Length: 120
Length: 110
Image 1 (cartoon, rainbow over the protein chains, first blue to last red):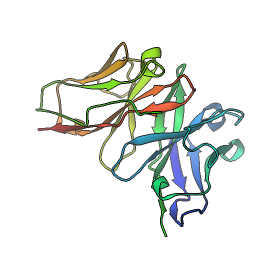
Image 2 (image 1 turned 135 degrees about the horizontal axis):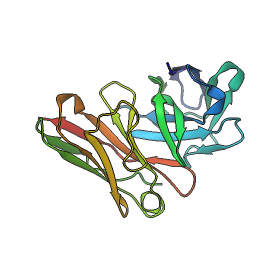
Image 3 (image 1 turned 30 degrees about the horizontal axis):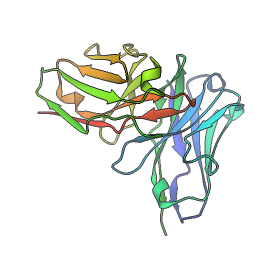
Image 4 (image 1 turned 45 degrees about the vertical axis):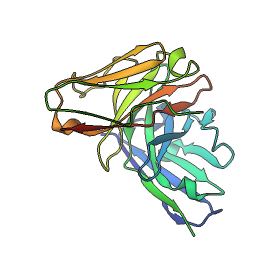
């Protein structure tokens, strides 16, 4: 059974940093692109970033590029999102998801999300 | 980049059919056959329900169907059931190798 479990969320002050983790199991992690998607409270989904199987290709939503970094560690089946210079508008539930690639990325399995709250 | 445009809400009675539209620009939705639809029930993670215009992942009911014309994609749910009440999001792949979501549509089953 495919499972994705996010961790690392919590309360952080504006300007602070946080690293989210996503532990994957039930599939060959190193064979899949992975992604992060976020959802602010009461708002819609916002794609954050994709990473390919070996980490050599990374794509970001334009508004976050430079502050957020997606990475992965295949031997330990983990995906990460490093978030720097956090702002109140980064407050959201952050989901990791597996990419089902059909010529373009679809997100076929999702974790339950990790809440990040940016507040003083 | 702007989100794809969806109606904020739609509603229907059990057994009826409803359609949710998703309108983009030529650089995303109109330029590709590449879009997906996701269902998100309250306090749950999103679920992929349509990909590549009309394809359904394993386990998704055939009451869900998709189509596209020009720069507008549509999701149709036939034979509405109470369990279909959820938020629905379209998404597309842009010319900049990024993913964009629609603003979401809240479906209410009356």
